[in-house]
Amino acid sequence: MSQPRKPPAPIKTPCIQVCVVDGESGLCLGCHRTLAEVAGWARFTEAEREAIMAELPSRRSRIQPEKLGLFR
Image 1 (cartoon, rainbow, N blue to C red):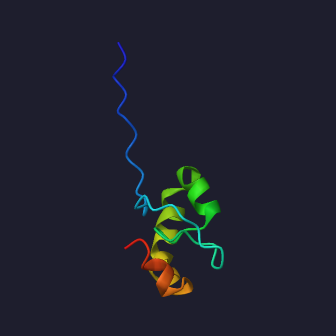
Image 2 (image 1 turned 135 degrees about the horizontal axis):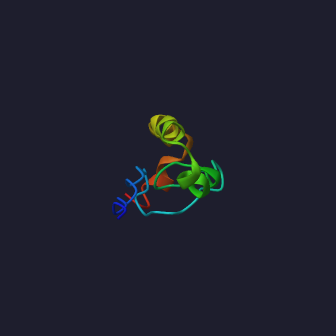
């Protein structure tokens, strides 16, 4: 008899369920990822996701502060 399969480990994500893309910067106002990053997140390797997540805090400065205030 085969062993039952374990469910896959959850994928770490910066998503806060505020999915609004800023037209100027091209970044999500919630998580600061690009549309391509959001769409491809599940296909990226863990290392690729970690690299992107390390960049996210610095991306915040690319979005006008008044836009960020709409959701936080």
